[in-house]
Image 1 (cartoon, rainbow, N blue to C red):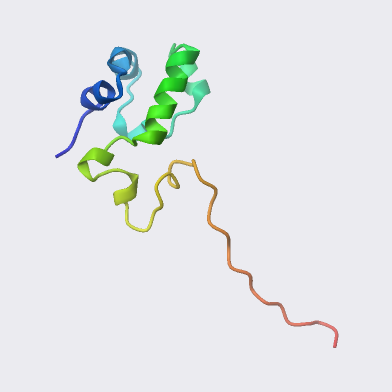
Image 2 (image 1 turned 90 degrees about the horizontal axis):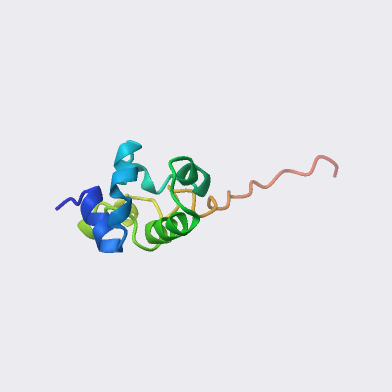
Length: 99
């Protein structure tokens, strides 16, 4: 079962932000990509920006329905949202040039 922006915001206690987010054309699929500066651009107060970003980090939109970040195969929660650094790259041994 999929949830919509209204339901997710209501579950987070942030339903008062629905009109501003909808007016800006934002939906659940992009909430995790937003920065505090972008939220300020659409008129959210500092407190509302902090609360929204905390809610997204704690309960990614879609997670309740199994469609969230953890459900993405091969992706650690938060990795696709830029919340975690990329995994370390494997080291390739280099042959000695001088023997």
